[in-house]
Structure formats: C-alpha cells, structure tokens
View (cartoon, helix red, strand yellow):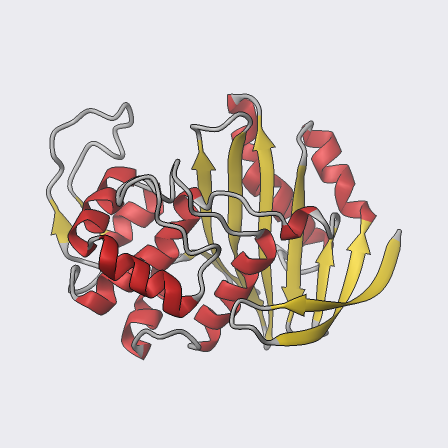
Length: 263
C-alpha cells in the first residue's frame, strides 16, 4: 500500500520546504520478517520525494553512535587534527575484544571497521569547544555535547533523527557544508562500501550498545546513473542477531526500489 502525503518539513537552519512523502507500508514486511522494530526513510533526487514506512518514527531523535564518524571525520580533517585519511594513530595496546580494532589505524581503515577507540582519541584532540562549534554551525541533530568529549555520540546526550541524517547526507553529497571541498571529497571517498557498473553504495553503520533496546543504524546513499537515493535505517536491537538486520533490511528495500541491481 502506498499513501501519498504532503507535509511541511522544518530544517535545522530554520528554513522549510514543502516535501512530498510516500508512506510505503510494504517496507514493513522486511522488519517483520527480521523480527525487529524500526524505520526506513529515503529521499530520492529524481522524484524529489521521501519514502518511509513510519513518518512519525523517522522524526524521532536517537543517539547517532558510529554514524557520527561521518561528521567526526570532517571536523578532524578541517582542523588538521588528521592531515588526511592515511595518517595513522598507534593502537594503545588495550584489547577491546575484536582483532580488527586491536591494531594501528588510519581514518580509512578505522571507519571501515568502525574502530571506536580511534575516533575517541581524535575527539580528545579536537576538544569540546571546537567540536561544539562545528555541531552548532552545521546544525547537527540537537547539538548536544553532554556525556564527555569521547562518549557524547556513543552514550551521551547527542541525538539525531533519521530525517536529519538524510538532510546531513544530502548536504555532504552536494558539498553544502562548512568544510573544504577537499575534506568533503575525502570523507565521501572513505564512505564507499560497494561499487559496480550499475551503482555506487556509500554507507555507515552505527550501534549504541549502552541502551535498552540498543540503537542500530545504517545510513548512506546510493548513486545509480544520474539519480541518487539517500537513506537512513534505524532499528531497535534486542539481541546480537538483530545487528545484521541493519544492513539486510536496507539492502532488501534498496533492491525493491530498483537501486541495488546485480544483473
């Protein structure tokens, strides 16, 4: 079932645009089959419309967890905390229970395996004042830094909605953020997870494990020809098996929409 609605969507910068929304209840079957509760929302540049299974939940605020690494990387590059994506930070020797984390990392490798310790160290080097400055001028989520400079996006006060995730990604893709073109292009490059002759998929997962239920994310965009679809999937994670559904549900919906094509 498809329900068309028109709504006035308020943006972080105070502007507003009349957006056309389609409520796609058919998306729900993927959540039901996986046994999880959540929302998928997308924005399609070709049709200028939002698509979602839950127009209320896609505006609810959740902690961003490791999806914040997108913003985080931009700030680190802009401030010169990391000169580029290949600058290595030495592992501190603390075993965090995953071999892929227990090694030296640069930004490219750290975002690929979502190495939290790497970005915690980067956050400490950025500092609270400079981080807050960029949260404010970008208008990222609720701009809340409470919880500590190395925890605010993991278990602290920072919150962002799925729709706001998409707004941020659209600005990233369009180069409409207060960061240099060079730094935006670096971050766009390290977000690429899959590339074929049919499409390019760029994405970042997120998991906030200090909540009950845990907060799971998969956000990004997929380019297919001249068209681009931005997406944000947010789910409640009750058990470990639920974690994989962040990507599987997203990929199934992207396939339904004709973007993730293997033939």
